[in-house]
Image (cartoon, rainbow, N blue to C red; front, top):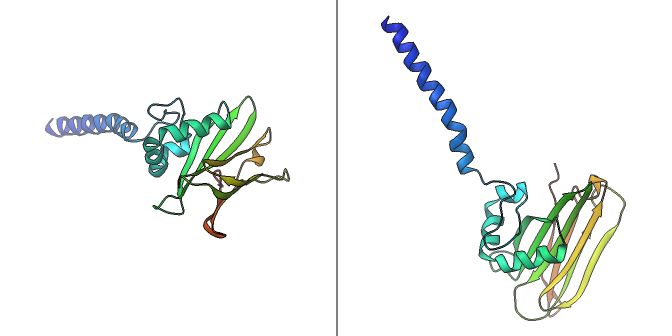
Length: 183
């Protein structure tokens, strides 16, 4: 009888743990689709898992909101990266969307120096031959937005984005990365 009682107690404890564990995990995981405080901008599932993007967005809600507005409706923040490093001469914002069968990626390169700089932002279609969109010139605020929208998801998968900023003819930012998940 004691063995039966012990087994029942162990079984009950295991069941309680199994039921509570998913709730604890869910409480610690960021929710996809969550809004950035003080804005109507949503985070993509990828951004919701990225602590750097969440922190940068939370510290700069006005810039995040302005960039999202320039990209257009349906876009969610997918990535925010300070460039070239913690000195943050610029910030590269990338937004993605999937609305009504249309896949989209949009990038904006924010000038954080407060003085006009020669900047270039180039976004190329991912795994298709749709070409590239480029915005280049001397900008005080930002380069872009540049975006690619297509019914074919391959147009945005692995889409390379390049952000370059020059000061006195020398590149102080020269960054190329995949604008979307590449796996």
